[in-house]
Length: 67
Image (cartoon, rainbow, N blue to C red):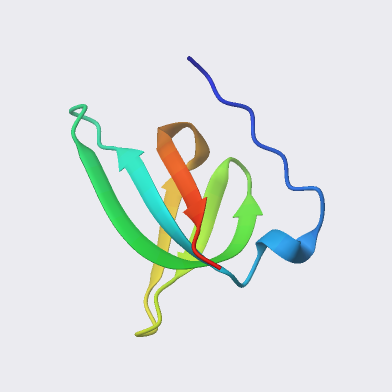
């Protein structure tokens, strides 16, 4: 099942999210980070410690805003 996501405005950015995504082998990975951008089919996140994380939109299993 394909999920369609839309960002109506910039209020979704700079907030902390719980992210679950599928790895290539079907396993599920999870993390929490701050969403900073959506570009070219990828969602970009920033960790509070300073690292950057990106995941392909179609690999997202769930995305929950924690704020």
